[in-house]
Image (cartoon, rainbow, N blue to C red):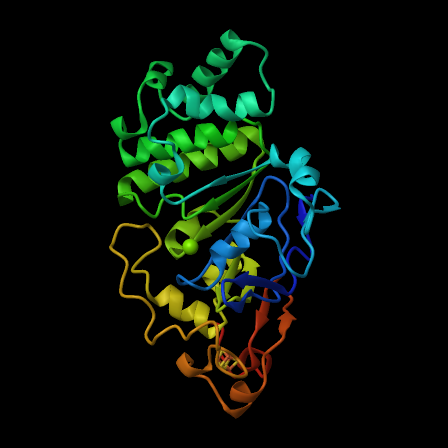
Length: 322
Ligand code: SF4
Ligand code: MG
């Protein structure tokens, strides 16, 4: 038990051109080794920003990122180098993240060469073949280019590439969102198998609660750059309590991923540059009162392991059932 321990990210402000946007703020969570922590929320809530902060693609202006006991927030590229091998990222669109002009063998061999993990070309080729087999592809597929594969196969190639450096921690940003539902399930199952075999730790980003239900040990629900509810997955799905979590759960027809997703939650997501006062969710919340409009709720810890930032929950006026 270790890995990314608290406070992972606390008060992070991301600079964007011409304006400073508080993209993520007060986001605290920890992930135990070998487990999956999922961040869920609508697009623009800051999930991807957290993912990129965690792997060092963005630099936090404040806060801590503890990886294996070391605070890696604000380390330079050079200082991060020993950690880079251990953390890899899988993106939503494998086609965009795979160089279209490279053969698959070279795409997967790149991290092997970069980190000096194999000695000599023969060993590199052998290892690439093993990695392809590992994700359910054939070693012979190495001679082809990314466009010769289906979306699901391309995501398998991205996974093989991510695994090449023997990582311990994978950040997966909507890894199956671009795929058909049946292919999604195959990739999710592959990811779960790999996690078991290699004792991988996942930070899993998704807007789809059905996907999150299948993958997670713990779930964090984000709204406008803040974590509004963090809970063990079984607690969150059995007893969603934050009004936003309830609304998100109402948008999925069933957790077996059979039906299509329903329309997103009623109401517009406000502009994150100028969020509403008090609880940022109050314009959309059926339980909002005057206090909600004035005062931002702080997270409270509940006996079942959930942490929820909501006045209504704290005041006991929101029922636990969905
Ligand atoms: Fe709704 Fe108030 Fe809770 Fe915000 S704090 S989610 S507005 S009840
Ligand atoms: Mg995103």
